[in-house]
Amino acid sequence: MKAIQFSKPGPPEVLCYTELPLPLISEDEILVRTHHIGVCIPDTLIRSGLYPWAPPLPTIPGIEASGIVEMVGKNIRKFSIGDQVIVSAREKPERCGCYAEFISARENEAYSVPSGASMEAAACLANYQVAYQMLHKGARIAEGDSILIYGAAGGVGSASVELSRLNGLNVIGVASDDEKLSFIKEIGAHFTIDRRHQEVGQAVMEITDGSGVDLILDPIGGVKFIERLGFLAPMGLLLCYGRLEGYPEGDLLKEMVANMGRSPAVRNFSMHSFDNQPDKRMEAMNSLIDLLSLNKISPRISNKLPLSEATKAHQLLESGTAIGKIILQP
Image (cartoon, rainbow, N blue to C red; front, side, top):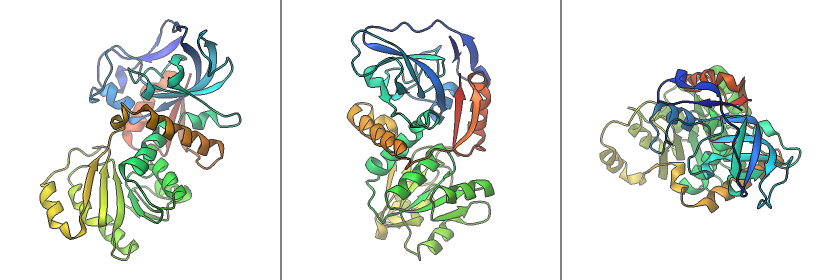
């Protein structure tokens, strides 16, 4: 089979399109022919050597793919040949392996995709898993809450906009491009803020009549992270799930004390909080598959590239220019 593999960490160019043996399945596994493969930030972190949970090298990256069951082991009861499935490497010990024409998976590492649901969209649900867990477990949202979403046109950001709107939140999306701002409105944001021309904190206070927001989702970090505490409503939460602009600077506790009248909170979020809670991962994925089959979520795919162009896919993702999701096709 054709697959993407790399043997040492580095820039996107370390990804090699190569020929590898077809996976041999055990009695407890299925063999899936991939149709669409999602490209995610964890893939780029593993490739670059920055991921704390990186698998041993050489490895095939990739945490999500949709496809068709080609073979089943004799102990398999959940799936049959021809079934549509999603393979989630978040359920695999090595957390990778999806950038390939074929993937082997145990029953608990795959999810059924209902007939009629988009297989392209099904390969985008890893981002929605992150958004779902941030909203329901990391923040414990309530209908009527207000939320400020940085990077709202990206994969996780756009998923957060859609899920926030579905859950009755008042959504403010932040971006820095006219096309991205238009997209954020299209998928459900009530308000948008253009980082190029607006001071985000001032815009938030104008939109909320000075109250601030109940929740901020922040994949950016960086030098302005701490000042975002000032955008929060009383008992508000600043949830960080990335450091695209580096580590925060300054004295976080001192700034929290300075805003003590509003009792702000900060949480650093990772999906690895659920490494030993497969039931919570399953709950989230099944809920998202239901929403997808009911057309209540509609992942935006910005680029569809052949598997051989995985290097280009990583370059696009890291450039920050993509709107929505990038997928690879074997």
